[in-house]
Amino acid sequence: DAGVIQSPRHEVTEMGQEVTLRCKPISGHNSLFWYRQTMMRGLELLIYFNNNVPIDDSGMPEDRFSAKMPNASFSTLKIQPSEPRDSAVYFCASTRGRGELFFGEGSRLTVL
Amino acid sequence: GNSVTQMEGPVTLSEEAFLTINCTYTATGYPSLFWYVQYPGEGLQLLLKATKADDKGSNKGFEATYRKETTSFHLEKGSVQVSDSAVYFCALSEGGGSNYKLTFGKGTLLTVNP
Image (cartoon, rainbow over all chains, first blue to last red; front, side, top):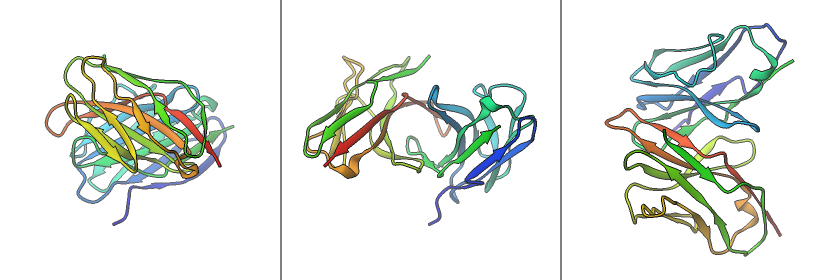
């Protein structure tokens, strides 16, 4: 079975540009999570969806960040405009049961 | 709110040494507890879990026991290998039904030398 698929794996952009990260969860999983990982702050939950509905977006840093899940097999995380402090690895994870999250390999974002 | 505190790394051991990574938690209810592992360049993957007090989770030679009285879930392995070099995350989950989220510790980097 395919795991959680994220794209792009690496993105380098300039400050002010729009960034869109994409995630395809594992088929049959009904919950999807976006995390951000940095050395300074560790792993932070940004937002999670259940059955395509956003349940908790309290971790979204500010209005520059937005996330959508138009259907059960696709989600996006958008940053507009991007800033250097957004540089991080962004992980998508999905699950259909309590406790075991399946993570993608991450999207490493560098904002210059 | 919920929180997880792990011992700060990095931890460096020789092959076949004994490993302990401490983890304590704060939660309002009765959480489930987890250890996740992240190998270089990869996402996190579940290593083991325990869902109630006194449960012991185990996998790949790693063990952790859910201790409610000390609010702890320390990770142990009797003899580490070079291939165990990774970042280890303690986490807890609270929530009902199909809605839940994990709260992670900051992670502990383990390096095992041959």
